[in-house]
Amino acid sequence: MKEGGVRGPWTGTWPASLVTLAVRLVLGAVFLYACFFKIADPEDFAINIATYQILPDGLVNVLALTLPWLELVAGVLLVAGALSREAGLAIAGMLVVFIVAILMAMDKGLQISCGCFASEQAQADIGWPKVIEDAAMLAGAAWVVVAGGGRLSVDELLARLKRNRGKDVEPSRGEGT
Image (cartoon, one colour):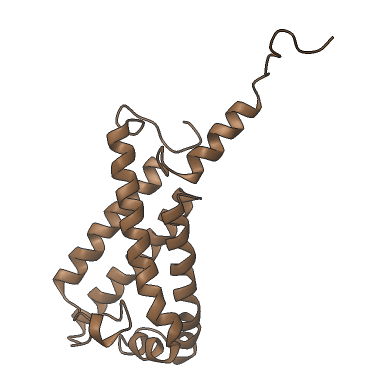
């Protein structure tokens, strides 16, 4: 296994790297967009969390203050392709929690908006379409966890620099005395 991620017959190719880049950019952009409104209005986001009726009140505010910053960090890392596997794993974990929360709210018969973007203009009601959307993003996050950042990432650049650092550089003729 190379440092950039798992390498198989499909992961090291340019088409796979382009897919990885597209997945990283889309997932990163979605999570960056999602965190913007939550960071700007944590009180509104806390209300969205509370409507799920899952967490005790004391944890609702903690989550409303910390989750958007985790989304921000993971989104920035994915867009940059730095610590891609770790960022993908963080996003995968968040998506699993989101899916479980939506399924629990659906089971309770709650008619609520998902709170995904914490903006009235961008709200979507919970339901199977939202579960499927989150599951598709989860598949993308899993791809990044398995494949790494791809050729077009900070991860790969750092791995190349590390590999090249170990190589001796031959002086050219005429140099030295």
